[in-house]
Amino acid sequence: MTTEPESTFDEPRLNAAEIRILGSLIEKQATSPETYPLTLNALVTACNQKTSREPVMNLTQGQVGQSLRALEGRGFAKLVMGSRADRWEHKVDKALELVPAQVILSGLMFLRGPQTINELLTRSGRMHEFEDTEQVVHQLERLIARGLAVLIPRQAGQREDRYTHALGDPADIEVIMAARQNPSDRGASSGVSVERIEELEARIAALEERLARLE
Image (spheres, rainbow, N blue to C red):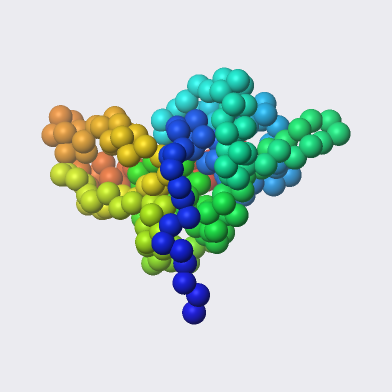
């Protein structure tokens, strides 16, 4: 039986642009292997997608290029020289010593922040085949044990805990959570139950998954 290092991630923490870049590269490697590694232009487009991104960002080519160089210096990304255009690939698996399932879960959390187990299971469907939520939990627990992910206990009006990565500034998590209107407040103001809201959110996640498969 092998043992994993306590943590393979060192300071300084990654910034929001770097996290979005890594998440986009992980996603495109899994969903669009025919165009991966990505050119700088393609990566900018991927980072600024309006779907499957939270929050939506508007990074410039200069910002992405600068962040890529910083990531390359830390072993998280690699420039692949090409005859027509240079391309970029992530090295998250090597840099953090992650298995494929952990790479995919990390990528989802890079792109969308805190998510429930069911959301991660649904959204990972086109990138990695988890048999059930237990497999997702197992990999998340391994990430948490190494200081690469955190569990966010359910808040008032929520039925489930949420998980997110731990590679960025902890304050960023607070910003994301604060930006999401409390489900209990939404239910009280609209007359719709919290359970109904969460059911609709789960259906939206499933529809996003189906749409992504068609893209």
